[in-house]
Length: 210
Image 1 (cartoon, rainbow, N blue to C red):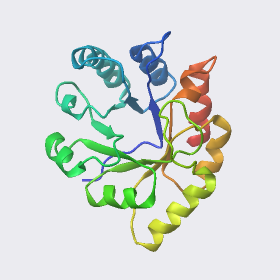
Image 2 (cartoon, rainbow, N blue to C red; image 1 turned 90 degrees about the vertical axis):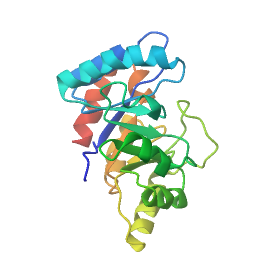
Image 3 (cartoon, one colour; image 1 turned 180 degrees about the vertical axis):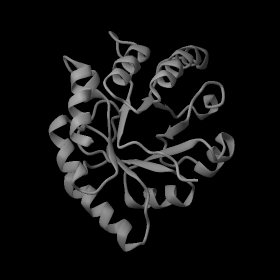
């Protein structure tokens, strides 16, 4: 079953001055059709309390809700799928737990991880990092535009296809060049959430992507 995968993945994050609920609200008002709830600081009970409110907002706006990593919560609220950041995770086992109707995304830093995720049933892959990011620090080399062009070439040469979402340190000025590589879309967090005007920052990126 082919699933809807947005071209613009907006990620909430733990912020001192704006809750995940508030982040979801302004993003939906700015046109978001895909929200990825990325919470690293709360218990399951706290996340579920927040997720029920976020799911209600997303439902009002017709927005897809994805949860980062916590796939054990996917059937406890109105959640459409999960994104797994552990690049060595057993996606086949996770797929069994969440079911075929839920969307399953995964992160990758290199071509072999992408191949493994395709083989193990991912619906899309968030790949990078494009550049420096404090949101999800890692030691992987920055891909830059050249990295995405190379990955797309490798997929074509191996007759493989899956929606690729560029992630990691993406700013407004990078959007057009990234979309022109042929990737499916982009994932953005800090460039929106930490801007002076998050709603406007989202709207500007949305305009460039769509």
